[in-house]
Picture 1 (cartoon, helix red, strand yellow):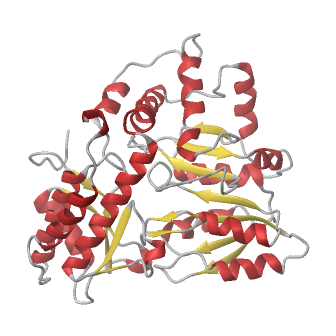
Picture 2 (picture 1 turned 90 degrees about the horizontal axis):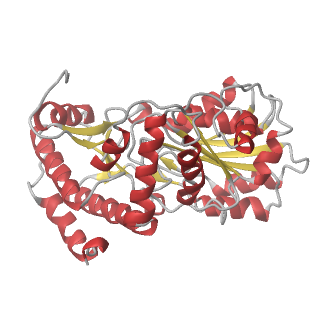
Length: 402
């Protein structure tokens, strides 16, 4: 039963959870089954192997946990580090803030670099810290690839270059929850040691799977880690991988069937490169709409722009929460609120997951109606037209229909 029924479909344009397409819903619509049966390992192995493709890795080992991105964070930290180990991490939005909080609760020694919200990782600061660490006391650098609270995407390749130039052996741990599978991510090329994502973002699944990929260097570190871990212990998974049964406890079988359908859609039907290009196209169309409205981005430099979420700054006399409330209550449109430091100052438009050009234009039209209703002097159709102009130039024919 819906608590707040409305005609038509809900237009879900938060930066996760995302729309779940029909093929995934159909794949998940099945009864429980015996995960110890001879048949289940075939499905298990296929998703464990194929999910690595969205991370662009052939060398890492993947782990699929029945959890959220928060659980995947915990897995990354506790399997590779010991209490008291020093970490460098950058607090530049709500989700980097929460990950750092988790690090501190596990009694890691976190060197927190505070950055202005709307900016990305300070590469010069990182360079100075690593070059001055002669004893190599820093054991890990932890970075959020795409900070969804501010619409900032960090350059992981540049971070790796800084680490290499400093000849520093620290592990590189990356939260790719709202980027992997939508924004270009190259685990092997960038020598990322642990990367993680969640099922409810680019994979367009319900919330419930935390997916972690660990490099050979990270697996070696896990053998020395002294952190307490049980549910998220990679070692337990590896034992069951070797046995060919894959799961140390009961997995979510319906989610795994959904994941299989998602991977087929991304890798085999649309193609990962095309998926990334589509997100780039929709992201730029949204930014063009914001510009046409006369509003600004929370992202302070185009080099940090995100292709999965746009955080829009409103004038000081408008409470951005009012825009989000009107969108939901009147137009059945779900937008993201501003979080923490940017609460009331920013609203967020998600363009993530299984969404196309016409869906995006409908959402932008809805935003214009909401802007008008809060008293902002928007010209109806201005943002939609700007987005249309971009999409008309950049949208290719659908590959399956050529």
